[in-house]
Amino acid sequence: MRMATETGVAIGESEWEVKVPAKKLKNKLHFENLKAVVMDTGLCSRCLTCVSICPSGLIVTAEDNVDFPDYEERCLDCGACVRVCPRYDYKPLSGLGDYIEFIAGQSKRFKGQDGAMATELIVSAIDMGMIDRGLFVDRDERWMTGIFHVQDAEQLGVLTLGGTKYTFANVLPELKKAVMFTKRGVGVVGTPCMVSGIRKLQQEFPVFRERVKLVVGLFCTENFHYEEVSRYLQEKGVDFSKLVKTDITKGKFIATMTDEEVKFKVKELEEILPGGCNVCTDFTAVESDASVGSVGSAKGFSTVVVRAENAKKVINYIREKRTAEFGEAKPEELDFLIGHKKKREENIKRD
Amino acid sequence: MKKVATPEYDIKDKLKYHVSALSTAAKEVVMPLNITTHYPRERRKWPDCFRGYILFDPERCISCFECSFVCPANAIWMKEAPSGRYYPTLDYGKCIFCHFCVDSCPGGALRSTKIHDVAYKNMDEMFTHTEEMIEPPEIIREDEGYVEYEIDKEDLTLKRTKGKDKLIVDVAPSQGVPMVSLCIDRGSCIACKVCEKVCESGAVSSLLDEAKMIIKMKIDSEKCTGCGLCVKECSMQILRLVRRE
Image (cartoon, rainbow over all chains, first blue to last red; front, top):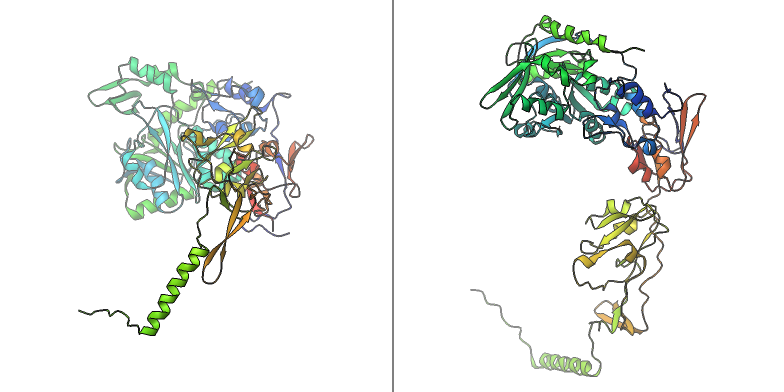
């Protein structure tokens, strides 16, 4: 049999097998299983792993939830959503996780929430040729999120890509597109739930294993639905047109505007806390290649937890090119929030 | 300054050239020689592969969108028919008559004609709906003969023939390069079976083995026509068209 040169697969042997995931509820569609086990129980973290892989109509609704409005007609029952959902067989992760290095960093090139190290890691990985595109969460003047594919450091000059956004973003559906487009590899920044989703995708599908080359996780206590948090903040007197940055420090939510600051206790936000975050115990994104956050390092610096060899290579490249300053970070400062999230294990209902 | 001198002829040469000029003039009076076609009373006979007005046969269309993808002028827009199938429409305001669509059509649903003289009153009219592409446009033919150019070593002459040239000729559809669909990353297949659904020729099949809980996917390369529908629809983008030989 002649080999097709560009693919390496011989023509003629076009038979293959795909395993079908077992159903918890027999005689129901896979999506109905997912809905019963994850969505209806409030486990869904809105990481959108299922939306990214669904070949049909799994979508994010106008209310910012994951749903499949006409699944009875359109669901193909392939079971891909069940295969990739990190909460279907939920094994909550917590703690600081394994790491090679625990450091503080401050980018000299970029400005972000703190040290802009997430941006620095992705752009350096592009510079060193590890990846050819990175996915960044952009925001508009109303603080709604959008995804931007960055292929060159210069693109970051004009975008509002740095800085924390406390609303969900549709990173993973864009990640799938990026994986289809990429020649060399993709880098992505995401919350712990997204990182778990990416790992699931990589575990199930070689195409993600081969092409997602750098996964940067963010320290995350919780995230909010856009409509809810914007209504809440407006009630608190936050003017979105003047909003410069949002941050959580020492138990307080601080919205910095051009002329004033609005502060209130984070606990107050619990009434709009999404169910998926309420059962999330992972603060540091333990499954990522490198985690980045502000807790644990001095003002103006980001804490970087280097967990994997690929991230270590990027850090070494940054050191070599001197695009960032490095300092000391204190792991013990994370203990409070790690503990705070660990407590959420109690919220997981077990049957 | 350098001057270019006029050639000097002696009386013998002068006489020779004068006679030649007079005889050419006399010849033209008796048998005029022009190379202009008297359109529309006569038409030029175009070769059978002429790229003119495009006709469409819905019976052969498999809605693969290849024509609209390949069109460099973005002149082809696929429109949903009442049957749920998608068929091409063609905007002659944009068409550059490259006929890439005709050549790339895997089912041979598009074909070329020698019709090149279609008039429109406005730009909107140039947008040709699917229904209008099935039958050739109405043309009033005043031609009673057709002409062909004959080129010999020195000159170009017209050959006039009585009768009407056939504007719609049967040309065998382009064979193209024989292609076959192939899955290049079987591990990433989610068995959504979209490929099986869209396949017109029944080349893709799936079989559920309930005991082992696996789905056996298969592409029959004998049945595959290489239309590329499955390649376009595959949600994981793991199918490719490859050359057969």
